[in-house]
Image (cartoon, rainbow, N blue to C red; front, side, top):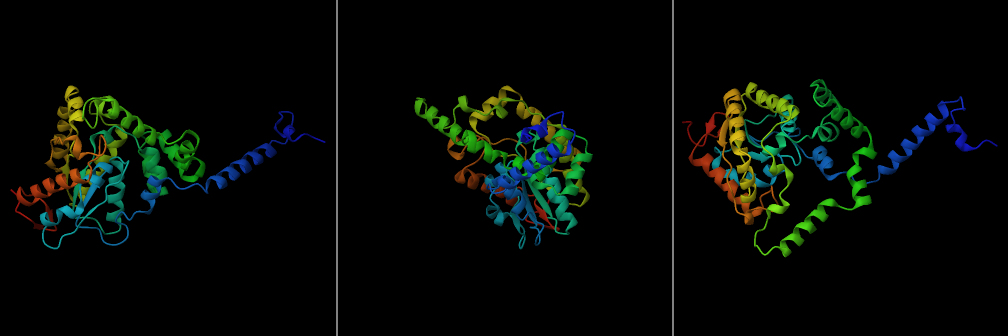
Length: 331
């Protein structure tokens, strides 16, 4: 009787058998992993209503997780013209390419906003989310547009593979299952450092993430889609108000040594000149440690404070216009 292992022998001329077995093995694995809980981030990107169903708000807040938790839509009520609506559609772990596809979808559906408060984290211009964009957010035609950009082709292919493969799609859950949760380990390490440190500093420099130890930069992929986003908004007369989110003292100190602010402000000035964007809050505002829940995100008190600050500027300094109505006149 032939050994089952003989089918993998080079002497076996029936090459279709091992190929079929490999395909069957992959199918079994994919089916098995389909019972894993879906990645929370991917699930949120696919399930949340990003303006495709129902009418879009007059004003939409866009950006990443820092804007999602740091600008509270309800806090802008008094700064808007009478009857105007506002919603926060900022998406966690995203870069400038996500707002482009979001706005493109809304415009195609005839439900675009009248104005956008755009508050991206500067480090997202250098960070790549191509795989997540293709696998967790884009439709197949949109993925095709990403591919045709010709930037980071390998990442696009990987994203497409994740899109059809449950094994790859749930790789984070598998890693946590095998290695444990790195986020919890990092949180524990930070807590231990705080206990050992004689200082009362909540966020010590020793634990500062690497992204805050680099100068301002952008990846060609992010810059390409950022320009498409700004061009699309201008083409459809959707005004963008750019807002820079607050930072920790330890982050401000690190960036100061790198001339980060100078480079970022120069980038913003060019954006404003080329695309007619209003730099509503250009400079970084430094908030104390007590206003943050980690090195990037404001806590509830910090979010309420900054929302009130920005809303107050809209109400008193002026500029926020919705469908020809304005809380104050343009200067």
